[in-house]
Image (cartoon, rainbow over all chains, first blue to last red; front, top):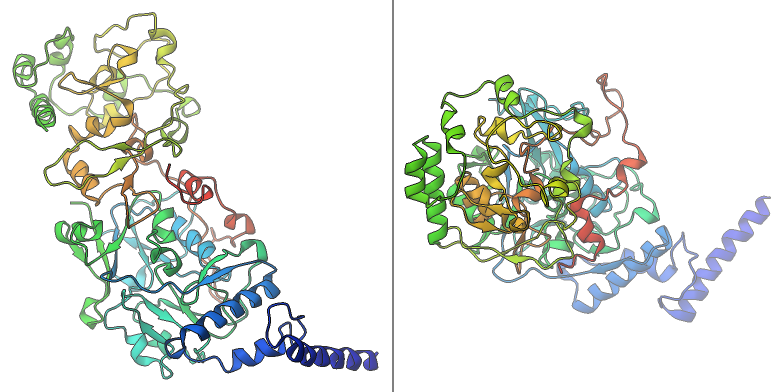
Length: 303
Length: 261
């Protein structure tokens, strides 16, 4: 029995070597090296920081991510690297008069962003009328029939601060602000120290304690390197304004799923955009504004 | 634009409960409405029971549901929006679905001329619930918004006939603030994109026109709880079924590759 195992392991090892020698990292190589190929494993190990990679290296990395997803989930994903558009800075606003606590946004986000099914980027807090005490906001309110009398609902997610404390806390610069204002994470550069999680005043960052649990048919094949590509175990992740959708001009999944129209998203630099109309004509506020993090995420009420 | 101003004017006059003659002067209403019946309504707000007595209420099982009556037709060509407000951006509005079987009025009133007197609807209309009447404090009934000629669809307070797909004109007569927000993007829902052409849902896509307030609904289950935390009695773990795509009107266009036709 043990001999058989050793034989198998040796065969796997030799196969890996052979595949490197034969194909030198071509996509057709046989999976043998821990479910990967030796060449891909080496390339993963020596992969540089996203901002330091050349265009060629990025393309190689994207193809490798697609190969890994094919091996792990058996699906063909498309991993892209759409850059930020010029003269675009994203902003978000939520109408707390309209939000009724359905949590549709939460589940749209989970499905769109290939989240492990025990992780959620959006937290919908049930708040007592007249109070803005986040400490007493309730995550686990009953889902029987919402909204509940005497309560309002306050969805929270990454605020994409202009002065993000999480970015300052990261010791390896695995997280940064993109030119369009989205705070992103390079999951392959993250060392999982979770300093950013304790630095974030909005509890917007989430840690993969285990390998994300989702099946192949749950995978959304439209992925982005800085967004919803399949994540490894032991890295921090967070809302990225659905970078795989918004950089193509589409709405984030949470906004598209909201049945009440409470969510407004758009370009802060465009004076005719909906978000600018809201900021200029409604009484907006931001959470924990006194911390000086300058979140690009506003809340407002009707009238 | 002139038409809208006239309409708003008519609306304001009607709401200030002036005499029908004044309304007629302001808005040019010259038809044979039973103004006596409307004038007979006093201006004091009705309590719920009294308002309901004016329009008979149906049991919930017979209610016309929101989804069936007013979901938009995502395959149809969106219509150019009328300019309701100065300086509003141009955009297009999704038409509603063409199958109006859930509104059986025309089954009879194709042949039977309707009685236009404002009254509590007798049988066979009495299964029809008009919660807008609560909203409008009993002032609204069928011919506030509908034309008596079935093919002419809707009509403004001014008396102008409009298509069902332009229902936002009708709503904006009274809900001016909401209409302004909707036109500029602070109210309502835009279809799929933040960039490029703006296509929005009509008022009636989200608000069922005869009972416009949103009814309470079941929410999706709450987040997974960490081990060791006390669990509320109502808590249940999310099931795989919660992650199945629901065929809502928001997702239908996504199944269509995000294309707006």
